[in-house]
Length: 141
Figure 1 (tube, one colour):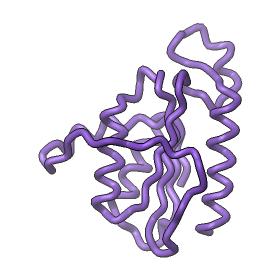
Figure 2: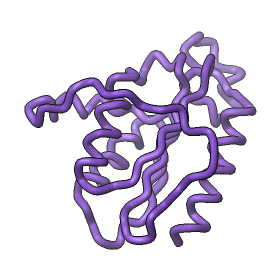
Figure 3: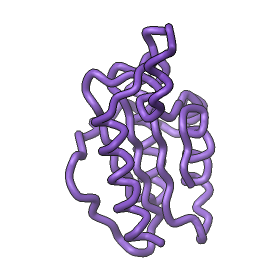
Figure 4: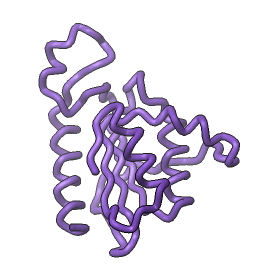
């Protein structure tokens, strides 16, 4: 499954469902504010590493790639960290790719015409996240 923006919610939910046929989940500038509902699970802030290299994967677990711009005002870093932890607690292999200086909607070239300062296309982030998407899909499908 691939999800952009609000599509982060179904990516999170699919990972938490532990469906056997779900092999790969990828989120681009995905909003994970729903993780706040999981606070009762004891999920607190954790460190998320900057993953910019090859994606190491097991063959039987759901592989999750979260691509996130650090300057995205709609995606709280703490929510990304909690989503990563929740997915790992459910048995997913999770990689988080953070992009410094990158805003919301970074994969969409039309964001260059958006008058809001919250949005912005970033060619490097778009290309890097898509290249890793293709790499991940080739390994898991």
